[in-house]
Amino acid sequence: MNLWGPGAFDNEVGAAFAQEVAQDGAFALAEAFDVALDPDTDFLAAEEGWRTLAAAEVLAAALTGDTSRLTDAGLRAWVAGADTAELEGLREVAHAAVSRVLVGDSELPDLWADAGDEAAWRTEVERVRGALG
Image 1 (cartoon, rainbow, N blue to C red):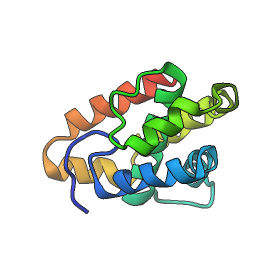
Image 2 (image 1 turned 90 degrees about the horizontal axis):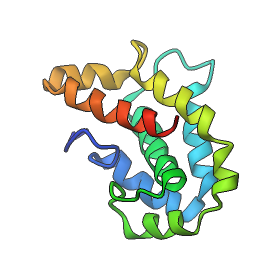
Image 3 (image 1 turned 180 degrees about the horizontal axis):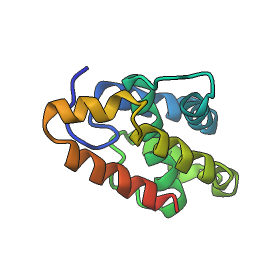
Image 4 (image 1 turned 180 degrees about the vertical axis):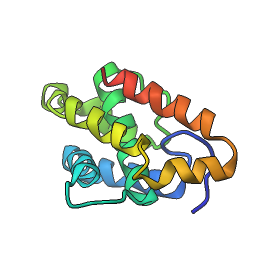
């Protein structure tokens, strides 16, 4: 998997997930969070971690109105029309899912450590987690 940058959409999985959300909406967000928090998952693979971070970025954009980090026009259009009252119910689970991506049983911290830019990645992830409250 190519890491283009530390942002949620700066990789192949995140970029593809943007299109999935534009098509499936809040269901895609909830599914990404559920996978990350599945108690039967001992190790969170990079793909699931990227999907979780992309979902969190979308949710944060919808709840805060800041769409500057959304790279897909279809996704920005979906966010503009999203029901924020419905999405508010995902805030807590999103925060927990992002926290799961940061821990030792997740592949992404190791990938970023190997790439030598873990600090920049963690800063970006913490920004998203902070936007979720």
